[in-house]
Structure formats: C-alpha cells, structure tokens
Image 1: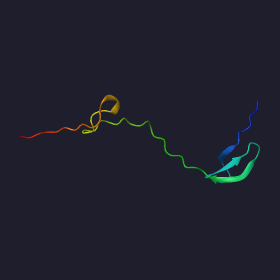
Image 2: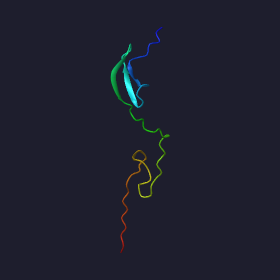
Image 3: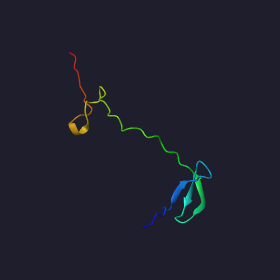
Image 4: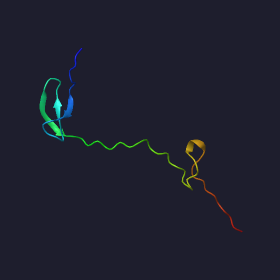
Length: 72
C-alpha cells in the first residue's frame, strides 16, 4: 500500500497565501494565489407566499390570476 500524496495544488508553507503544484514526486516552481473560498451559509430558507403572486406554484395550479370587476 502506498501513502504517496497525489498530484495537486497544496498550500505553500514558504509563501503564505499561495499554492504550489506537487507533481506526485516533487514540488514544482508552479505557484498561484490561494483561491478565496466563499463563506458557507446554511440551507436556503423557504420562500413564503407573497400576496398577489397567485398563492402557489405552477405544479399545483397556482400562478397569476386576473380578476375583472364590472361596475354598472
């Protein structure tokens, strides 16, 4: 069984804020700035019905409703 580290980009301890390419056997001269990781937020919140949006989704028969009012 081998414990070899697979090729890839890893944080460069000599230059903070950069990554260096490991080719599977040795470090190369190829570096790049560390990619910014977007903050992780929880699962999306459910969207409440907004008055006037038809009160439902298309799958349940909701949608836009037009109401006409005749005045005599």
